[in-house]
Length: 410
Image (cartoon, rainbow, N blue to C red):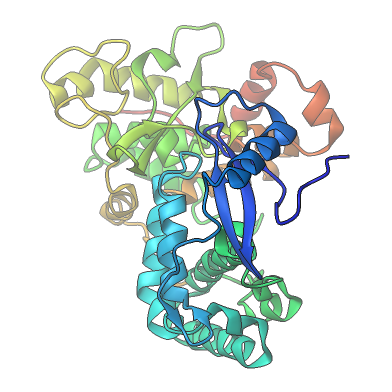
């Protein structure tokens, strides 16, 4: 058992490999001691010994810079600034997550709770303010926005219970049952979500979309991948030409990366897939094979002005780089152009609905749920899928895919 000197917390290792030792400088006040990379420290014991030696030698002072405070300690606004300074360099967090954190606080949290002392959230009065904030937010924002803002605030308050957040709160009130009950719930009747018997679009509708003379070739080819291989928009945007194996015995596509809308390096940059399970090989439907051949033979060169190379994006912008077009807006415009509705139950359809349609068609065709999950890039369920389904399952996936009755007629 590791014995810790007085006033030292449990050491932990950051994502960049550096060890951090929490040190108590006052009641409920901690200073994180970060050990330089050059120090030959291995494990918690050596981290404690290094930090203790520095404290005893006076190399590290027993005080920390005080943030601007209210009468009852640091406010939400002040600790939010410190929280973001810790999160922004963390390469484990995506640019989209950081951007959402900032916008949730700037637009919703800080105007209502910014000048309130964080410490007060440990009291009944402070928790009433949280409840009032959530109720007010529900009155002006949609269900998903309310839940997303609450999730960001919950993560922030987790920080305030940690040594790096001065352990101001002993527990996070947003993890209480009363808060979960206060947040809006998803209802099965929500028109936005298809039932198994009522997909947003049926096969005949999508065939009409693919045949539409006003639908550009590149967009129609993208639709075949989304409806038959159930690829996400970012996965399609992240494909390279060499990753579409059109001449294989079972034609297939490799998904190894995704093109992110918001990336640390800028807009439309190649990055990791949404989850580890999203890295997969999927068969290409006959309609998709024909569509991709037409696109690579005719459309790609017309767009870029030169022949495609294996490492080029499969669906580039006009300068040959990776692209993230406004797929939802294009999808709705193309639906309207062929005489179809761009809404479901009064809500706009989006490109992501193509995955929902394809999954619904497969389930209604009695395709095994494990195969549908593999198409979607979702986590396996149960030991059989996790431990014993090895390899691509391309043959089984290909047979299932044939049940989607789309054809390429252009």
